[in-house]
Amino acid sequence: MPRSLRSGLFFVFSPTVLRLVLSETILGLALFGPFFMDDAARTTAEATRSARLPNAFRALRHRNFQLFFAGQFISLTGTWMQSVAQSWLVYRLTGSVVLLGMIGFSSQIPVFFLTPLGGAAADRFNRHKILLVTQTAAMFFAFVLAFLTLTGNVQIWHLFAIAVCFGIANAFDIPTRQAFAVDMVGKEDLINAIALNSSMFNGARIVGPAIAGILVASVGEGWCFFGNAVSYIAVIAGLLLMKISPVIRPRTGSTFAHIAEGFAYVLKTKPILALLLLLGLVSLMGMPYAVLMPIFADQILGGGSSTLGFLMGASGTGALIAALALATRRHVFGLGRWVVFACGAFGISIILFSASRTFWLSALLLIPAGFSMMTQMSSSNTLIQAMIPDELRGRVMSVYSMMFMGLAPLGSLLAGSLAGLIGAPETVAIGGAVCIAGALVFGLKFSHLEKEGRRMIVSMQMTGGEPASKAAFQHPG
Image (cartoon, rainbow, N blue to C red; front, top):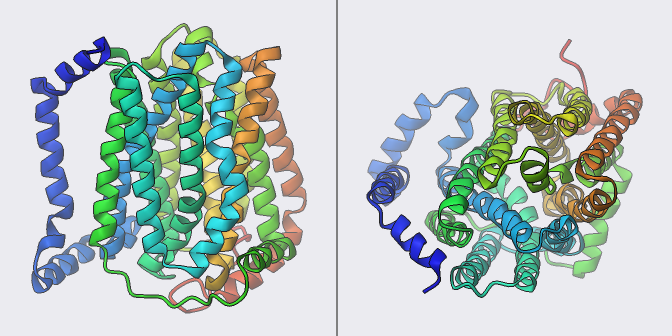
């Protein structure tokens, strides 16, 4: 039996971990227990809980979103564990900066090419069933990766192949999940649901890397992969427990005609196009700083896997704060300016991070970097979803996914190659400068987008079927 497997089994069955598992089981019963009640008891419990929910968590009054939120948080924690462990494994096996970028490229390039198909599927078929298929497939891939690593048979080509498989699943999962939000909460609480989704994503982003850093240092990367595989059970269980009303979606016309219709809508809608282009620029040039994080943890700051986990957690902390701040908003006015300032602030933050040679200063600088990155991403998501009609939601959000995640692999490949030539700090600094330039250009065109953005928000009747009274791109004064 490989040493890492023996150490892992000893770790898993230690008293500390067994107590942790017991506490998580109790938490799971607390989260999912109400959904096994009879209808009358559940209705009473949900009404009481809804009355107590503050404004920032109002989307959680919907039973389906409660299930989704709980399951996704557990699953995303595992996903972040795997992301950090995989980066460290690639770096440990190869010591190559370029291969770090290529792994990121392999996992995300399918999103760029296949997401339009995923968006079209989300507008034509049952989104609930699509998510069940994609989450089950991802669980299988995670188990395969865990088995190969724990048995000591993992090779670099295995990591590339499994990364591509995850990318294919994500190409259908991401746009479907984005469009599925309105099916769970309706338009009235859509803005809050988007913000809470971001909070959940970044809460997991704090917890996952921290756990991964400890596990990698103590028992190896394989147990992080196994933990991710098991975590998918939570989200699959949540999806199975949901009660989704059937939605009849038109299937007339070919799939490619539907895809073309979505792209045509984006191209002719200037506010949406501008938001997506700015997001794509940041995804291409700014966000790949995370791919180079193992280099900063090891070569720049002289740490190890725990340092990497802490740095990723610091960025996630900033992003979580931003998501919670957005969750308190009831209206979308002012978010356009948030996008501009957040993009510029993100560029400044990662430039300063690239210049730091001290661990605590680097971690501190990653908090505003995560805050501004999440502010731009979540604000753009909210504005776009507020402006699009339901029948195009999946396809437009697939373009959003292409810009946000689809361009990231190209950025990862570019960043890895450039870092091999000029160094990781210089590469990150260049990306930050490009983000600042993008914010300036978007800001100069801002006033021209305001009028059309106002008209679209009003026409989509943002709040509970009543026209929104403020413009999305208007400063609150």
